[in-house]
Length: 296
Image 1 (tube, one colour):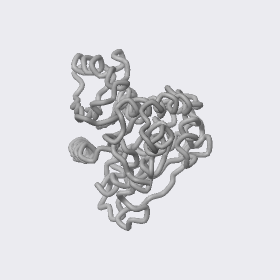
Image 2: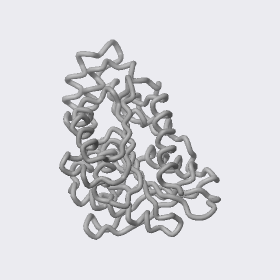
Image 3: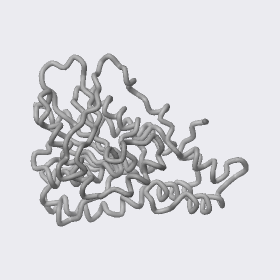
Image 4: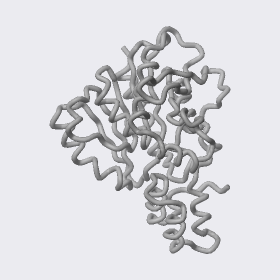
């Protein structure tokens, strides 16, 4: 399949696709509304297929890269869904204990893109753990539409507990220093904000285009935040002014970046919404932020 970029699609179609991936539109509604923007062979169905992830594009760190060690790790979540699983990645030649980073996926479970993000962190000399919220229903199913449907049917409070417990398990790992940060994308970005209100010992949190917590919860945040937003992301960005006001009012340490001419999901290099320049810049800022707050 030819790799397309966001500029290859009418802005209206990108907004419709955002509604589709976040459950505000079903497939039929997307196709019906996108049809008016079809040109020649680039039909509504063709646009939808072109916008879906292609995980072959995303592998920056091979699974068998000798510089890292990876494994699937089971853990208990007594207040959540019970027995859970995640993907652990760490350097092969670590000298001593390392800081830890929890990697929280989008609303589709632990897919190959998120596993690759964990491996990228391992190459940057962190112990990374990416839990799969879809573990109770058999894990990520390999199909994004099925994954999204399974995710939408879950008990949200139990899922929150599963991810909170993953952070506790990671922090207690013998190969870590006990210092832990979090990075998450879309749904995972929202969980990063939420974890910052629940974990007083969270040392750094990096939400990518994540939903904000309510202003009344902001006073509980002790961790410094590095917040990444896409400029063309109305659904998420509408909550930013009130969130920023609350962060300031409560003296929460934060830095926020809004990347010009980018779409929700710009870090995800499996879809046309990926923006290489913004992804690279935001990721370097993320690594610098974790190095600043998790080491020493």
